[in-house]
Amino acid sequence: MLKNKKIVLGITGGIAAYKSAELIRVFVKAGAEVKVIMTRNATEFITPLTLRTLSRNPVATDMFDAAQPYDMAHIALADWADAFVIAPATGNLIGKIASGIADDLLTTTLMAENKPTLICPAMNDKMLANPFLRENLRKLAGTGYRVMQSDVGELACNVTGAGRLPEIPEILDELEALLTVQDFTGHKVLVTAGPTQEPLDPVRYITNYSSGKMGYALAKAAHQRGAKVTLISGPTKIAPPKVETVIFVRTAQEMHRAVMDACSKASVIIKAAAVADYRPRVTAAEKIKKDRGLAGVELVCNPDIIAAIGAKKKRGILVGFAMETQDLLDNARRKMTRKNMDMIVANNLCDKGAGFEADTNIITILDRFGGCAALEKMTKQEAAHRILDHILSLKMKKGPAGKK
Ligand code: PMT
Image (spheres, helix red, strand yellow):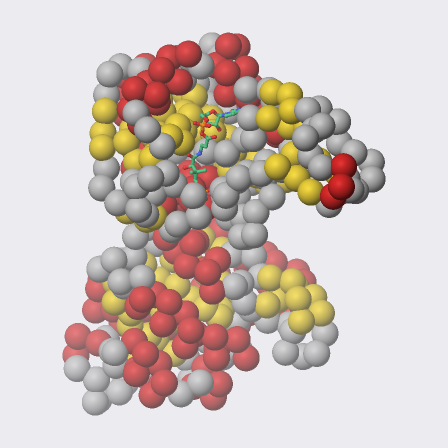
């Protein structure tokens, strides 16, 4: 999403300035071109040479630097950028923007630009709690700046509290969201992800290989496009994306309850979870001894969650996944019709780079109007956006009733 985007990174004078080196590296790796403006104080914490080397561009520090070409002036940078990121943003810088002060290259450029701008505050916890600073942050948020919340944790001044620079991947996510068309604004999207675990006894369970990556990619993409997202996740080893609500469950029955509670509020439901079809009828209270064996374990069917939603669905869009190893499209189409889905995303576990655990997927999207889109191998994040694109096109076909 950052491919070929032009980003101006503004760095101010706080200890977190040292993290800007990693931020530039991540932006460049994501395909962006980065130009840096540092305040004079920022140069006390990290050298322009480091940032010039990482960004592969000259670093601007001075309004009146005769060595800089004319087109490096504040107006040229304001025009050049697709987006601005200020990280770390000190209380001083935030106060200056909020008060309309432009007394150095960074603040002058910020006054001259009208591009999407992300402010990442980082400072001591008492400074962050200061009422003037709070008011200034509210002012910025109310005038179109995207203001991130500082993280809570250990601060450089040896106390624990709010004021840490948000983690680099979170800044990257916010920047991507800032540059994304907000075409899901007003939608409430419910996503399920990951496996379920069905306990046999206190030490064993039945599960599958789902990592949660596909479902998490969908939740992240919907959030980036402006939706309010509820993510219901089985147990995974990866961190969930930052969305409005995350509910962790373990078993299919728990997932069933959580989904049925949440689904009436959703305008789009996407069931990417790999729900275990069976569970042991009884969970043994004590560890089943090896010599007793598992032959006596009786399995019963779990609730079919998506079929239950399909049966009571009146409005909104219901999207399922089909995980197959043979007759992919026929099986997927049958599932879509039988469970009253609007759309199904088919993936074949036998295709290399598709299905469980990988960062990529190979999907075919089928819809109830006969639409069929077979996509090449792509990252799960890209696939998530293509699925959301298809959902929007389906909403156009269904008309306003498809929107809650
Ligand atoms: O998590 P990853 O490692 O990234 O892997 C991604 C994935 C392979 C898990 C994902 O792409 C996928 O295919 N998810 C659906 C897996 C699945 O359960 O497929 P199915 O064909 O068995 O089920 C069809 C649909 O019914 C699915 O939407 C499923 O969520 C739903 N279902 C299934 C059983 C059940 N008891 N209740 C359900 O709601």
